[in-house]
Length: 150
Image (cartoon, rainbow, N blue to C red; front, side, top):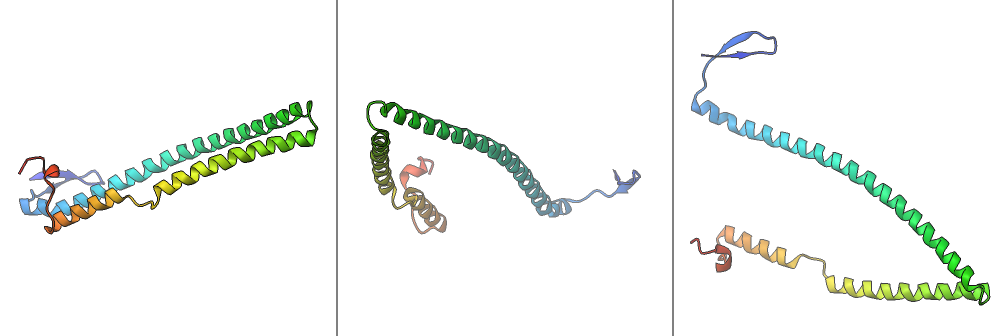
């Protein structure tokens, strides 16, 4: 007989378990292991998400100050142009320049989005369908996937 220690610190005799009893414990042990791993994964992801959130907030703050700096530079550019032309014309010229830049970037963005439509992962969907058919035995595995093992 083997001994075990309970929470009260007293040693109690324990009968040896048979193979069937040990095999019966496997589903419970696997379930506890999976639960423990999922809990560890959850804690780790939460910790990483907190760190990521703080970093993202700091970057947003930095971008805000960069935007404010850009506004100051634009104002300085308008004031510099107002030395050689009326102030309203300088502001209008800078606004027109930004309109042209925004239009060009918008057009480039539109063409990129149009290339990506529809946003479905076609190759992955086809691969998964092929895998499902192979598992069901409906289709055949292409020779390139087999690797010459069969």
